[in-house]
Image (cartoon, rainbow, N blue to C red; front, side, top):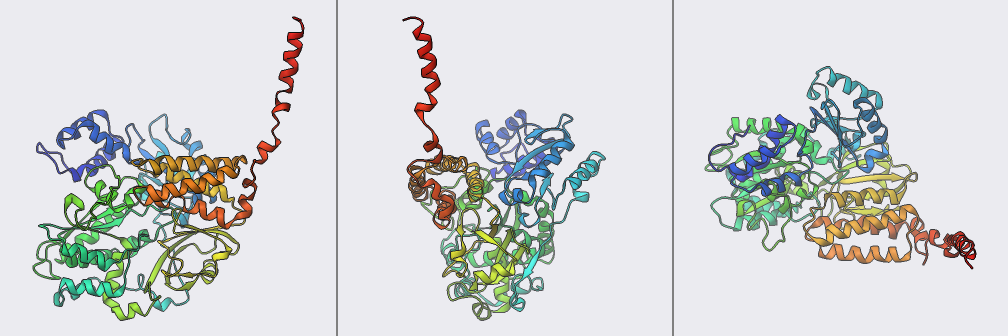
Length: 584
């Protein structure tokens, strides 16, 4: 628990204070904001600006039991409509409301990282998976009888699936704690950087920037203190690989952070954990405590003396944009999670204006394994450009949902067979911000040379309506845009309206031209990756599924063609003529 004092408090504690107040009072009231502003030496407006930016902070009572239903397209395809109806029936209010007895608040939220176990929800940030209307009734009954959500929630399954070459797995093989840290005793930071550069390990959050090069840049920047941040804000819809790593092998994350910190000269590490994964926080902190106990974290740690490095967990509060590294840094600093223009990069001036490295969970977890297995063995896997293995989160219309560790270079059609995608129509590759793939792509290769993927693989079969899927993706980007730049804020809203016209059957060629032109403007002028990538799937789908969109390519829509102004005004003209004839 964080206590406010009479002295000015470090602003980086602001979100933790907001979480603590909300946990106790179920909302953050007007007087709370006034007190917080005074303690942090901020204006009320600054505090409110932070508070209102994040989805999970409430200004009014959100109930003793706050229920968040996942509104992603995968969730809806798996029956979330009936689950919503069941919750509404049991607590007596529609979605978006507080029950009359203030016991239950029922809200929707974006993907919660459980796409392979939908329908799912969070209740006081405890996970409940594979829901049915009957299960909902039981859950509400138990809560009314005083049982705590944490006492009977579901532990999300890891659903780790193996491709035929299971002997070539890297991430999920047995791992001996502390084993990779022996490397530090006989190697300099520069040696570790060169090894990671040789391994060609690239960021696994979607940007794929060379990890060793990022570490080198940070190493070269001199400062009295440097920071290392693990980006565990896994917000891309359909992605849950980092959740599984945090559940199954958090020790490899901690060791990866220790190794990275040694390489760049960082003394403080932060795990930025998305709010939706709050139920994992205690387990991660338990592992951190274990490494402290054995003197592998703290002052003069056993791995290499003198080397000071410690780690703490910072909890996010529901903002997809905080997956972008500068927005994430702002969030940790207690600010709105808005991305900055990269005049300088975080490795130069990041958290608290000090050199900062931000790496994804999967990236950091790979480092201890590379040291353990040897870089040559790692390089023998995968392809020339992308050696090693990759974790993919698979959900949607397939038999075998879950986490797959594949070797880069795998044939895509073979992968579809393994996951049991029997009748795939569209594959959403690397999440809504990635690419829409059709049959024409199925013989391609999963690799950095061809089809590269950040982690999300959503399968949609012949029964699914593509414009409706695109509408859900567009709704997500409209909701999650931070709003700081006009192209993203306004452009995505306008594209959303074009998709509405498609669904209503009134779009025409001009709309399709507008989509292409506006998408280009949004992509090339947006401040960060959200706007730059938000229209990818829409334009891919239009190009790759021409039969779906050909009816909109005419000069006039079917609706306009069937509309006759003369017929529509015929009765009006007749009535006016009859009325005026009496006065002639």
